[in-house]
Image 1 (spheres, rainbow over the protein chains, first blue to last red):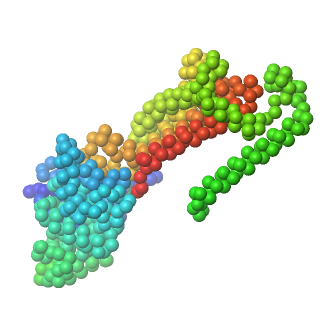
Image 2 (cartoon, protein in one colour; image 1 turned 180 degrees about the vertical axis):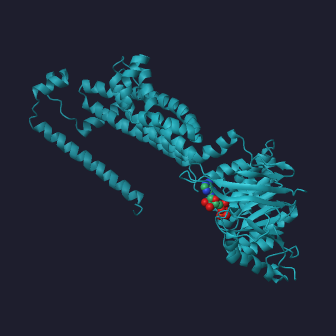
Image 3 (cartoon, each protein chain N blue to C red; image 1 turned 60 degrees about the vertical axis):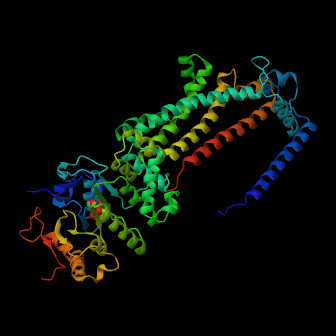
Length: 285
Length: 281
Ligand SMILES: Nc1ncnc2c1ncn2[C@@H]1O[C@H](COP(=O)(O)OP(=O)(O)O)[C@@H](O)[C@H]1O
Ligand SMILES: [Mg+2]
């Protein structure tokens, strides 16, 4: 069988319970792939194990069973090739915005001179529109500005894969929209492979090529894969006018509101975790 | 609490000082008029000066002020081992404190770092720290004198042993409670252990470490006076003890004031350093 660029192969994650009882299984037997240059979103309710999956992809956590293969090699731990944009932005508060980015640039290029690092930082500061905030500490920045620094820091190491854990969920709607467009543009320009967790349906439809639908936990499963057939390039302004948008959105909402809970109890017969069914709600039957 | 106006506070402080000194002056005038009786037993206890010299009245602020000026005029004279300027004595004490405190910092901070990073070591060493920490540093003095046999080095050891605990505990705590997400940032950037330690953990824990260092310097300065009273020879503590034997209360009061001021200066120094490394989340 041909392997995808990122191939998640039968991973499980179990946490020991506090009083020595049987381990609690967050999920098991999870299989999916991400092609090179593809943008995949993972949608599911809180607590189903989305962050745990992302941490395993990042190498920050280890699967209890199974493994993740990237470009033919099983991942052993974190890597500069897999950058993470954290939900809580995770900036180092004693460094300025620019120094936070410089910290990442120096990690990728330990031999670079001060001037080279500064030049590279400037590039990313300009790209994410941070010029006025470069010299400020994170505590002095708004939520949106902080997340811009987080984006610049992740991109500045020039990763092959960008992992995002609900990067915009703490932001107001306006800021969120602006940053969605920027991430969309940058990912398309740099041909990054991207994996994003979200529970914002519109965000998923705007950004993703494929959307993984996860059932409620414990023992969460990726029940279906929604293929986003809406044509690119998409922007926030026109995406909801595209034919098929409503069908796509309703399908995902139905899943979140109703089916994610029902499917958590019983999966349909014949459902195979290794061959998750693909649906194309936007394509007229 | 509402923010007080700094100028008003300052004026009130000055007023209180003037009031205190004024009452003291009046009281000392009064006691001189009255016929102070010295209990002979007490006179025998306090030594020759009190017994032969009759009454040594509590000095008035004017007398203490004059003595302070004398000390300030020539703080660094040396006229034999028992008669050295207050500046010289202070320098001895400060030297011992800085030596003991410095060595303690050199041991406590790296050790605290290792303990903070390893839950195993944290658990293993915690009982020892908990038992050793509450011991009065002066309780170590006989043991130190017995093993080291040098009074100056013994007092440095006592400073070492009393200032190590707050620094050790705070460093370990600060390092252990570095936010996991900051460590994850370092991991995704493939930072080496050293780079993570110096560029992430150290700055993250620095405010907590500095707080420990500030507590330590306060304790060290408290202990040095007592330690020097015990071992004698030199230092501000010995100075106080020596002036007590001379029954020179004005000198003792001068020394007390100086001890307070130096202690405050040390504390403020560390406070400034703490502010320099603190950050806002
Ligand atoms: N370190 C941990 N120890 C025990 N349980 C954990 C730990 N981390 C996560 N979990 C559990 O795993 C489940 C999934 O967590 P998470 O991946 O954060 O969910 P999501 O990101 O989808 O909201 C939750 O029920 C949570 O309680
Ligand atoms: Mg999460």
